[in-house]
Length: 205
Image (cartoon, rainbow, N blue to C red; front, side, top):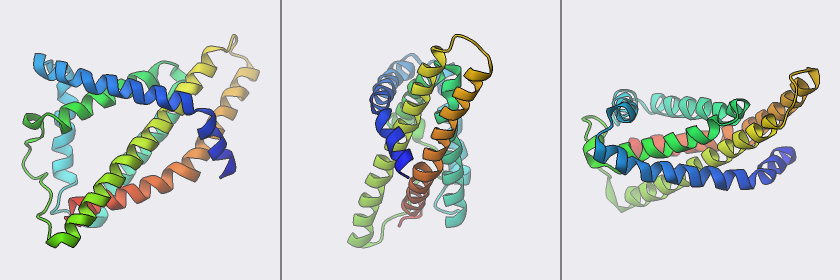
């Protein structure tokens, strides 16, 4: 656990940079939507259809939880190790911000049948809904930023290598091991808690 915390701390500047790139992508979503650039709009639209089929209030809680948890866990792991290709983490951060801007904050794109949250039952459920929704947003943004920050720092380290020999391979393997340790120690538990709360929100808590 301590080693995982250290690597998160050591990559804090890359984490902030990942958030900045994400925000730029989010801002770009309005331009993409305004210009109706179909090549950049097809994925968020497809993803919302996917969610409406597999993650909706009519589905069983366990299915909603597993789909969210597995999707987020696989994505976060790929984000962490994507720095092997140096610039890929920055591209992912930008595209993710853009896709979220299109799917969540542009109403015409989110009007997909079957993805409405169930009607809340009383003030207690409403309070739980607000609390869980807020925590899900905070936790997922935090893990997303940390993962991409680690990916970016990995890319920075890989870019400094001058040869492709055994020494470089061992160096990369060590960096990957540190990231996988942080992934299983910190990210997976947080993603499990987030998936549980998000499934609760979708089911109407």
